Length: 318
Image (cartoon, rainbow, N blue to C red; front, top):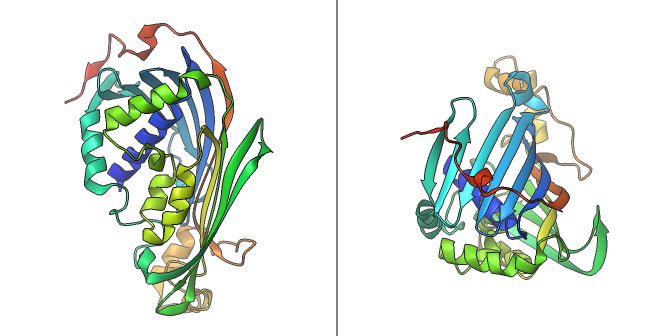
């Protein structure tokens, strides 16, 4: 699970880095919500040059179980050097760094191709093939104002019904918007080709941010997969949500009945940890997972090349 998230994070950084000139600064806010764990907010500032990136992000829990643990905000610094074929993960506290060869990322891409990994989105007891899906896709090709930019985009909805249990339903909503006119546009395609070459992948567009998660949902989502590939430009807004009719594998009636049973200590512990049964969405379901990201600012920035180097007082961790 951690390795898959690491790959998705690295690819997200590489793909966002396609929007560069000399140096470009991009600020992004990402909110992730997981049933049982709560919501986490990440504010990320990234600096890009044609063959390198510097990313600094600060994540903190804002609701749910994680927010009750009183853990400090987590700061992550990553430097990606396409010219050197490495990724450096920096630890400011220990003044140390970890080096990961890009060849390692390429090997993982070849191994799973984002379509052979067990999906975490539908829960642990079911897989995408357990559902019969009805998917609708709308392409918005007329310029639409999204935040600060005129964008084109895609809006999709997938409804799944468990083939063995009509009470188990899933609703997946997906919305992504792209801008074609942004600072650094002139070198966008050049860098895109560089990333293709470095990753030795012919499916660069498929790896765009959340597309990796769409991939693990299986062949029923190929049409949506292909629709996302067709868009060019920089992804400036993304909303992806999974809703279920069940809670931790229980129907709502089963969940309520279980809580009323004093012998059902396990369910009571779960309910206590998550702060009680969550409210239903506007669709009358329970949110299982969601991720929302938006780019708030893009600007050019002239930086010294040393900015993308390891600080001299840092040591390499084996």
